[in-house]
Image 1 (cartoon, rainbow over the protein chains, first blue to last red):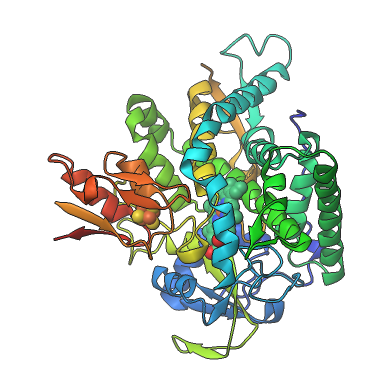
Image 2 (image 1 turned 90 degrees about the vertical axis):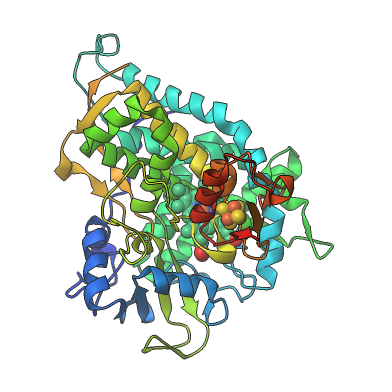
Length: 426
Length: 64
Ligand code: HEM
Ligand code: SF4
């Protein structure tokens, strides 16, 4: 596995919109400043304008309180999941199935598309991956050390700077999902490219976006055909042989669900791992505490998920209606920032502090209601093992250069470049 | 103390099973069930309350 993956840098020039002038009336979740300053922006809006609106993307709302985010997540009548990524052009297949079931499906179809996928992601199916994930994390760290100039690998006191996002976090979920789906591991760069196109290129010219979706579909058609020619036991074959209402799934359903699994699991988990390491790099007292009190790991992981929840989802307004005094119009977008809900002081005590021993933590990082993250058991496993292994191998570390941290763009928030100076190696 | 799960509300977050495997199990679809008919063995009441307080869907409750 190559350890320096060239990143496609965010290109503000490609955006259809200019820089944001006012975060209350003209916000843009794909402006690089949004994720960089998300916590301040949400706190500010919570005080001044709890449901903001922008004309961008054909009209988009941004509720930031826990109460509003919850209410929308549970209200599948006024809000459809037909599309969950706010962008200039989405593939808008008809409700209730949508382009990537079950995430783009509405009731009652959603239930059936989701039920199909629940068993392979249930805890008892996911737990056995633990050893493989741990080995993968160790291999990534070994590869970083091997890549260092002579002598460094063997001298634990030699200074060492690594990129915890590029050389570590980004590889973990890609590798696991590629193995689950039975896709070539060498295509990892390609998968990250697809994820980038779908989730980060949201403000590009619609024609560019549509071409990106076509590339992804074409790639998956080849993979599905390969499973027809070489049958094997994996999630792709499982979907190809599944039925719904006693009928085999359509090719579009199989492909759409694979698109979802490929996209939903990758930069979400990579972001959660990266943000957790970013927090620890800036808070050495938490690292020391985790060494001294390893029983705090479970609450620490849930707290990282709360405080740095990586995933904002979206809905479309299903019918004109008034929401808390806001005149919402059919087909406008509504961002569903679970991360902002998790930071609402009306719901969480000391909401703006990261408390790794927080015992009561009813956070919504994996969503609420019928679309609860289907991969949450896998995501938690990958996050816990990845962060634990990092801290075990690198018992002391800090940010090499806080200004060099680069955050993602769009609805998934996490560090894409995260230079870390390792101060001590185990 | 006796606890119950509202299966219409449970979405399978599995916070309960992770926090208190002595009190909860999960089925093949990842939905939670209470063990022992929901009767909480003496000494595990705090764990039961912790599970109730961490369920994101408010699906676990104390039965009388
Ligand atoms: C830390 C990592 C992750 C976070 C924070 C996260 C978050 C979320 C959220 C908030 C939703 C709700 C969507 C909505 O309400 O519209 C969701 C749905 C989903 N996630 Fe995740 N996710 C993560 C990792 C994964 C992984 C690893 C997979 C699988 C490989 C996955 C698969 C899915 C699927 C299939 C859905 C759609 C479920 C449905 O619509 O019924 N996610 N995720
Ligand atoms: S924590 Fe709540 S929603 Fe999750 S499995 Fe347990 S009862 Fe169900």
